[in-house]
Length: 316
Ligand code: DON
Image (spheres, rainbow, N blue to C red):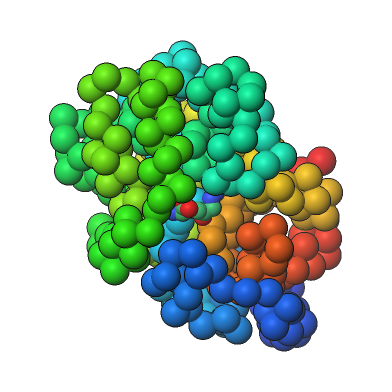
C-alpha cells in the first residue's frame, strides 16, 4: 500500500495551521467543574492523523495524556450494542439530539418521561453504561477497559484515579440524573445507582493521548475492522449507528455547526479531546484543553475545520 498523499501535504502545512489554531486557546477556558481537569495546560494543542497502513502525521502535544470523558461514550455505546443489540439499547435511550446542555435534566421530564434523548448526553450515557454485561461494577468496568484496549490496540490503557475520584466527589448533577433514571425504570431494579455511576465515572476517566484516539478512530473509519491488524472488532451496523450519533450529537450543541464547517463524524470531551475520522481514510485524535462556550476544544475545532476544508473531507 503506497502512503496516502494527503499525509505528506499535511506534514508540510501542519506547523503553520497549528500556530494559527493555538492562538485561539486564549479565547477559551479549561473545564473546572471536575476540579482535577482544571490542571490541564490551557495552551496545549496536539493532533495525530493515522492512515490505514499505519503511517501517521502528528504535531504539537500529541503525547499529552488526558482523559476521554465524553469520547468514551461512543465506545460504551458500541459495547452495549454488542451486549444487548439494537432493541435492548433503544428500549432505554432515544436517537435524537436535544439542543440542551449535555448534563441537562430538562427533557427527561418534559418529553417521553424518563427516557434520555440519545446515548451521548450524560443521562443517555449513564443508561447505556447500565446495559453493559457484568455481574459487578468491577466486572463491567474490566469489560469496558478490555474493549477500549482492543480498539486502541493498547494493553496499557487505564483510568486515571485522581480524575475518577475528582468527578465522583463532585458529580451532584450526574447523581441526580441517575436517580431520576432509576425512579423512571430506565435503570432497572437490579441496577444500583452508585454502581452504575462508578463504571460511568471510570470510563470517562480512561486516560488517552491523541495517538490513541486516532488509533480508535481508525477502526471506526474502517467500519469496525482494524485496517492495520485486519481484525473485525465491531459489527459494521453498530459503527454506523455510533457515527450517526457523532454527526448529530457528538459536538454537543455545536454539532450542526461542526457538520457544516468540518463535515466529519466527531466526538468531543470536556478534557479538550476530539476523536474524528475521514471514512475509509484516516483516524484522527486532537487535544486542546481550552474549551469554547459550547464545551468543545476551541483550538481543536479550529484546526479540524482548517484541515477538513483544505482537503475537502466533508462527508456531505
Ligand atoms: O459526566 C460528565 O460530566 C463528564 N464525565 C463527561 C462530560 C463530557 O465530556 C461532556 N459530555 N457530553
